[in-house]
Length: 301
Image (cartoon, rainbow, N blue to C red; front, side):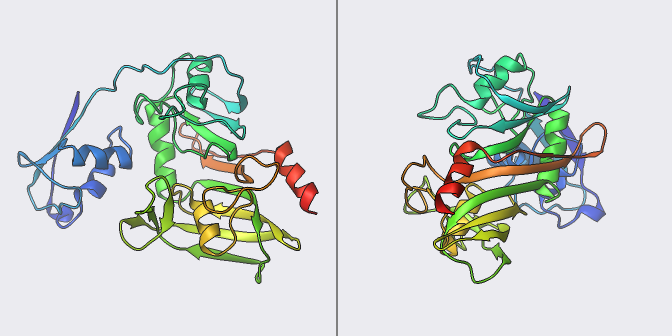
């Protein structure tokens, strides 16, 4: 177990403890830190506190980070499309239909199983034993680019960029309906759907801010070929926001309706950009539209 101790000063008074601790040089992501606080892993003057606790002058803060559990996910020799790789990270072009990490109903044959084999287990441990190396995710039936961290340092550096909205994520999608405007922004908070815990929805309570920028690339009679840029990265964000404004992603059988001949939503993570954790240089990657996507475009044009 790794332990860190800090003393709050006058300049820290009134600051939320979770925001204060994430600014320290600790190998932990914001989400992991908040879970650790919820589990009692952070104490102030010897007593556990909640993540909204506001610091007082002289507070003695102790954080205990448990050692990563031994990984019990199987490495599997599954082909993956690696766009870029070095000692710190790799960028992968995930195919439609591949699950990113093991979960109930998908215990193996995931991207994580493939990464464990390819990287010989050398992946960051910050996101636990089920999601080693996974800094951000894309849905099973969404194709495209995502970055994977090999080291904890790279993971923290990339996660910080995501939290600061300096991480470039550009998507392409085919959505239903005609747009009255060429471009715009959806700024609507997203949270868990109370009626169906497997779904997300736009709601005001127990939600997080979510911002999606959109642009119409091509408009057809009943559909539109779109570009989306994520400012935030909430679960199912583009799919939820599209359904919210009355333009569900084509083929989305959760927030819209199925489309004949298409397995799940027509959504592709086309562009990814970030500052490299070691070189501190900006890197940007772009992938071609996959065959299923171009097939849909040819069908509706």
